Image (cartoon, rainbow, N blue to C red; front, side):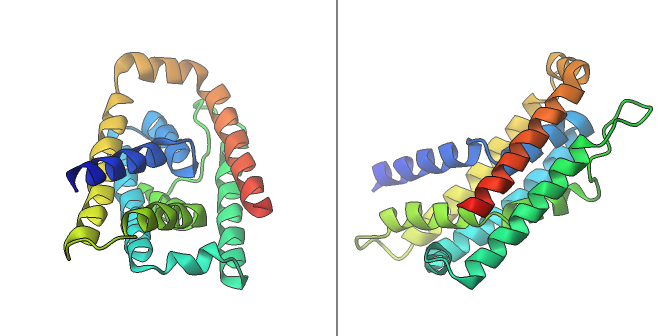
Length: 197
């Protein structure tokens, strides 16, 4: 049973750190806006992950996996949100050299970015289903849920902290416009992929 928990933790860690809207937005925000905004965004993304994990473990993710009007509507909203983020990155820099990305509350930006990603819920559903197929103790679903939440909070906070190292920050400042354009292209690609998926 301990081996299964370790396997689940590893799969979740790889999934959370794979390139996607959450990772892109968190990295860019942490580099451009600093430690506090990065950690606030981690809390927002983690709140969304908590809800996704709860729905997946509760089995509701099956509805989205089957498609239908609800799934298409959520995917459309998610694609529009990614386009909006990309548009903010593509705007011309201000005289100060900063990019006018849609700002606002980093917690809410992270929360909406995660909640409006239906693939996150489907990913959770498929992984969780694998670990719930045979009988387990009553505490098993709660252990899976705790692993998801703890990993998101711990490792993403660590990632944000690492991005504050002066050499990393200096390189970001030097190449910030190119990085923002690259992020905008990736976010646009993710939005298009989401609409065609």
